[in-house]
Figure 1 (tube, rainbow, N blue to C red):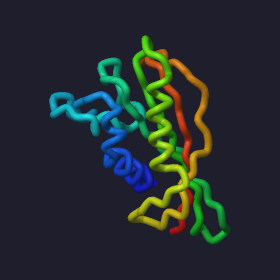
Figure 2 (figure 1 turned 45 degrees about the vertical axis):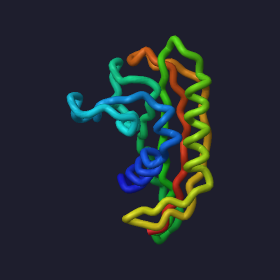
Figure 3 (figure 1 turned 60 degrees about the vertical axis):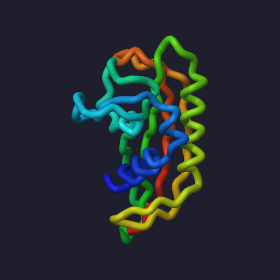
Figure 4 (figure 1 turned 180 degrees about the horizontal axis):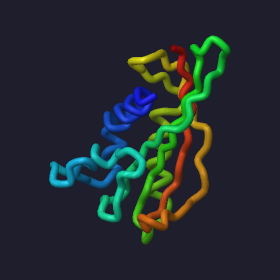
Length: 147
């Protein structure tokens, strides 16, 4: 399951256009490390109020078996884009649109299986994360996998 999340991470951090839209942060697991925009794509739950905005989180969702033989699965990923609460949602929308361009209707190479298709399922409403005190929106993606 972690392979799909890593593959999506690699697609997102490999896109210079997307990275130019993000804040510059140290690695989430090394706060004293070198800051750069690729470190603004982080696993869900590792952001703090000190994380420079805008940034993206990736969260793995359920993996659902689609056939009786157990070779065809749908795996879901949730991608959130956060920005400062004093700013509008326009930048968030621009970033999520770029991510949609990269992922929707795409085929991503996976080490543990063949990605049949990646699809944007939905992008939810504008929300405020009370803990981080930041604006965000979340997009969900379905990744169809054959093992």
